[in-house]
Amino acid sequence: MKMSKMFIQTLREYPSDAEVVSHKMLGRAGFIKKLAPGIYTFTPLMWRVLKKIENIVREEMDNAGAQELLMPFVQPKELWEESGRWEVYGRELMRLKDRHDRDMCLGPTHEEIITSVARDVLKSYKQLPVNLYQIQSKFRDEIRPRYGLLRGREFIMKDAYSFDIDEEGLDKEYQNMAKAYKKIFDRCGLDTKMVQSDSGAIGGSVSHEFMVITDTDAGENDVFYCNSCDYSANSNHAVSNLTEAIIDGKDYFKETKIIDTPNTHSIEELSRFLNIPETLILKTLVYIVDKKPVLALIRADKAVEETKLMNAAGGIDIRIASSAEIAELMAEKGFDAVPGFIGPKGMKDVKIIADETVRDMKNFVVGINQTDKHMVGANLSDLEIDNIDYADIRLVQQGELCPQCGKPLFVTKGIEVGNIFKLGTKYSKPMNAVYTDVNGKTHPYIMGCYGIGISRTAAAAVEAHYDEHGIKWPIAIAPYHVVIVPVNINDELQMKTAEKMYEDLKSAGVEVVLDDRDERAGVKFKDADLIGFPFRVTVGKTISEGFVEYKIRETGEQKKYTPDEATQKLINIIKAVK
Image (cartoon, rainbow, N blue to C red):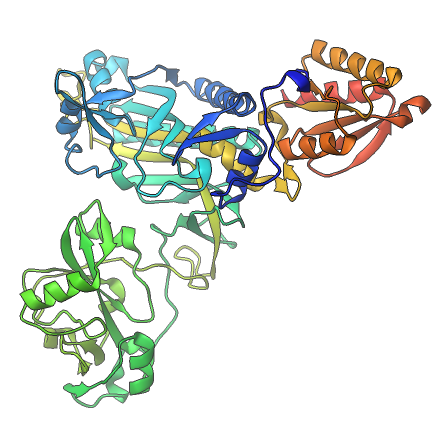
């Protein structure tokens, strides 16, 4: 490709709405063009990157025994009603009506569609196991699309679905897909961690995410991991062993009573006022889960992990209650308390979920729904709670102990690029998707689900490979392998050498760009670094001595070679990658 013919526009500045590295770099280098919030046009350069990622995915999925198909992007309401997700999925599901007034949606995922396809074809145990996958655009109407391709509304995804006759078969395919994913991300130049995670709206009993570890602001999830064993988990699934703490306040409070605690609206203020550790305070938080109030109880030195709480409450949507909603709840229950003094006592007909840290607390301090007052020396029996459920709703903190080996846990940021789920019969059972066994009895399929964000993977690669000058694409997914830069296009020897190398590399299957623009060398070099070509060959004044300059973008290493040496070196490198 000649640079003068390439459909590309690099910018002097980053896009004004770009917050993270990948959004900034991809926008400025001309890979993506924003159409609407969370919706982008992929320019030819970006499309080449995405197709390379897709091809890697296809090769490894095919090698793992999966078969590719393509399902409709627009989906009918009836199938979502069969699975029970039409009413509960949330506003991320883009609903619409066709000209016949039939309810439809834009596919955010394809569990319902693939299950309906499978039940029409897979009738016998003899046809199982099967793994079917597609690569297709998805749409999720995110309330706040941001971070460019990392949290867009329209995106490209590979989703696969396995069908087995039993859990043993699902376990085998789950591991098969985990190995395939490792190969895929390794080939894309990404170092990933497979971490335990929450299943979210897709559901299922077991799930793992493949996270690209990054120190940039784009890491949307905290990943807790242990350096002494293989434990790693997303924050919404991580657990830990706690170090010892004071949880019995008998040395602080000799009796149970209500005392004045004026202006102690925060845990810190209450702890200072009473001169006690925060571990002796029972904290009560009010959340709204699926439009209903839920009280979360937790030891005050710990924080609530909202996804864990939502799952414990059996909901699909969660947020912290507003001051107005808390005031409304207090009035409904006959109390007059403001945040900071809320407690579970007297909260009839309200779902109460307590973290496991609450079980062993004794002689503690708790709000009693009276402003400027707390109960001290309290125990759960003093609170007259008859509707309490216990669950792990705690957010793990760095330094807490690994649940597997007892060593301290570390935390880092991660970008999710893939996920795998054990769905079991979540979709096959309600949708009556069954097979007949050897004895003629019917059973629902045991299903698995396996997703890779194609466009997210491209963005994550930028987050992992860049410097202040631009992108450093891994060779396997770079839009082109090499850019040849003649410093002066009016110099006959420079252009003749550049064009010969260009033709020789093309003939050998190397994807190469010749920057034949009539621009200053500095402009060409800046664009080459910004776009992120893995290799740059500069044909300048040294050609009179028989040498060109060869530069590796990833390391910055520069060397001089003869044109033939540089050409052969590049051919050998690209052949090895392919």
